[in-house]
Image 1 (cartoon, rainbow, N blue to C red):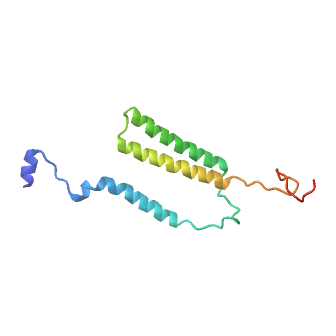
Image 2: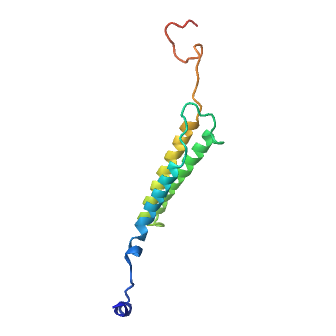
Image 3: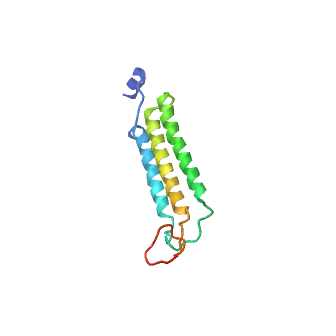
Length: 127
């Protein structure tokens, strides 16, 4: 039977090799989800360390994500990449952009006001 296939020019494909493509992204997703569970939970309002990150890092990450997204769309439109690669690139760009925006928002300092510096009038406070 194998010799007949080889004579006809057919390749032998096993079940593993047929499903290798779609399984790889799923394995990466499962590994990434597992890696996220290894990060310790921090108290949101008492944390003082940012591990050297600044809001600029969030902006940079968002710009990288936007570039990946635009690159995926642009390369697909000129026919340089396949639709599958373009969709993966667009998804990755959206995810990286979202992480950058969240990082920027989380690391940006919150304004603090005193009674005299509130930018809007408040009843009962004499200036």
